[in-house]
Amino acid sequence: MRTELSFAPLAGIATELLAVLAVDTQPAKGRDAKPQPTLLTADAQVQAAAAGVLATGEYKAGANETLLLHAPAGLAARRLLIVGLGKLAKATPHSVREAAGTAVRFAKPRGIREIVVALPENFSKSPLHAVAVVEGALVGDFDPDTYRSERKDQSIETLTIAAPADADRAATEAAVAEGVILGESQNFARSLVNEPGNKLTPTILGQRAALMAQEVGLGWEVHSTKMLDQLKMGAFSSVAQGSAEPPALIVLRYEPEGVTEGPILHPTDKDPSVGAPVHHPTDKDPSVGAPVLGLVGKGITFDSGGISIKPSDNMDKMKCDMAGGAAIIAAMRAIALLKPRVRVFAIVCAAENMPSGSAQKPGDVQTAMPLDPDKPGKTIEIVNTDAEGRLVLADGITYARRLGATHLIDAATLTGAISVALGKITAGAFSNDDATYARFEAGLAVSGEKFWRLPLGEEYAELIKSDIGDIKNTGGRFGGAITAAEFLHTFVEDTPWIHLDIAGVAWVEDARPFIAKGPSGAAVRSILEWVRSF
Image (cartoon, rainbow, N blue to C red; front, side, top):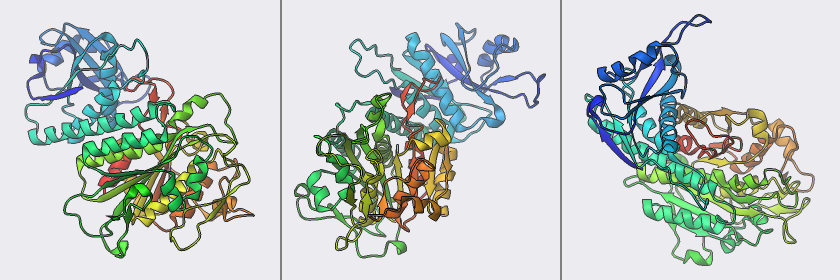
């Protein structure tokens, strides 16, 4: 999609479709309160063109409600589309984001390949709305039908953002550019999650991450079994051992110019292809320097459940068990392009979880990566081989700490239990540090994503204590999302940390007006806002 910016009067813009946003400004409540749809534009000719139909009361400006006018009087546009935001008091940048996606998805099946979306006026002059319009439009343009033999490309070719003539041009241009980065990054995550397991093995995921890193200027390394063995990543390796596909340890690095305080991640002189650790933290105490953010993602490219095999119903969706890793990779793409002044590195642990003669078994005991190479790692009793995501994350988190992360965030489609608790609308969040979580929570107002913080605690940690080893990899049916988080907490220890369980929201079960059925790209925006808060 080509994105352009115009400051011309709306009435004079010649286009196939002009989309204008509207809100319901009726302040009263109750059965007799009639909606008052109000266009968010000061253009008198657009107002006049829509006045007649708005006066009928048929259109209420509900959230993502659409109204199409052909050959609108006085406008150069062939069609005028009005998209609602709902009640004015509840309208947010996220409402604008969804409305822009709705406009695009309305146009696509009608053969419309160019669209103009007017930025909302008389609503807010915040550049966040320009960001939201572009991002929402790009997200709305994504379709998952990649492998259809007779696929019809319905993509929007040109998106024009129409800004008011008195808008701050530099700020608007910057906001549009940011929106493109965010939308494309979220779609990059969706494209990864959308790939079937035979087309996106751990090795190929590593290749895709490396290619992206080269394009945007990130440092990167991708390693496999030899490195896992050298680092003593016994938990990660145990998940991969049942598959013919080798695992991939993906490391991405962002080091902004001029940020020199805090621990520095140095590559070793030894060729990393022979299994040498890629980076070593300096001896400087990270608590006294600038923060270094570690992003860790679960990258299970297909999850059969292993020996504790899943039911066949919906197992095909288990190609999306790497959605957390995809979100981390995509967030790193956005970070590289938006250039926040904080050091960030990402670790994605990619593997297949398959049943075979070499697969780990319930009752096995695995040894996780030690934080101190000279000391033994924690031992894990494998109670259920389908609780594999926490195993790869355990070693990924420990590696991030060894590389010098002062703050951690991880993303994973970790538990079905989170969907039972919160449904398919809200994702789960956990943290061991209120200040660190406050940064994340504040960013949700910008990202528009829904997360709910759940508790941690010693009572839950007791449920994963093992009789034979240090901990076991599941605490049973009740409180499953919390005991999974406590499992990770064991490896995080006191490092400020946030855990995002996105299992319920990583896949859109049914198409919505603003987004296609399929991968959602959940958590990309929220992770980015957390990083930018530093």
